[in-house]
Amino acid sequence: MLFFNHISVKAAEESTEESAERLDYEPNSVLALNYHRVRNINWLDRFLMFFSNPYELKRYSVSTEEFKRQMNWLIDHDAKFLTLDELLKYKEAGQFPERSVWINFDDMDHTIYDNAFPILKKLAIPATGFVITGQIGNSNFSDMNMINTKELNEMHQTGLWEFASHTHDLHYLDAKNRSLLARKNYTTIYQDLQKSNQYLKNEWDIDNRTLAYPYGEGNDTVAKALENTGIQYAFTLEEKVITPDLNDQYLPRILMNNSSFERLIETWKGFETNEVD
Image 1 (cartoon, rainbow, N blue to C red):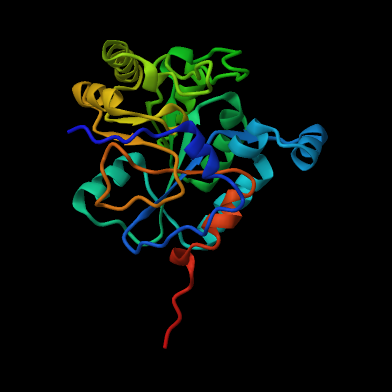
Image 2: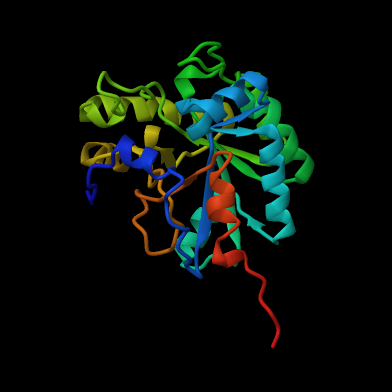
């Protein structure tokens, strides 16, 4: 069934503004925490973040130090870390464990392998990587150095990482700064998703059922292609929790950066200590 209102890149960007309200609490829910870059922030990065408004650093990046702090904070507050498979099973069953958290990454550039992977491995936290399958190993894709197949295999072999689709080669913005995926015709989208699914099957024997929309944007044409390629679940970028009643092809993930965790997650009612009367 088609359902989409147009989901805009601008809306996803605005959801990360400091002025956003606190994250609404739902008792039967999961926090889907979405990361893009985990950077070793140098003095120049810190200067730019303090004195300017660099889009990439402020919107899509977390420092390695901050990422480690966030993971330890979640552990200290008894988070129940879910795999992608567990997330989907709980949603289908209609009930999530308390304090459920799903850690996921888009794009899979080398900062994830270099900085996030060792931390998650040491802490035994599962994660999902949404892979642009046609750009694996590309050393200069949109100014990113992408993780190669050997390195993805290393991550997968730990048993902590699952991979899913972030398209095969439709992760671009058009001349008006809009997601290219949502502006292609049905045949182009369908063929791209088929290629992505086939890569995941060939490389890791994954029968892929999930897509992370590039820039969080989709529409009815994308939804139709999803259905016909066997992708049942799709993820956007919104400051909301996932609950069992939400449409499977419009599931929100919360974009993480150096400020959003403290602003939204640390203040979330679900992590408040239950006091005994």
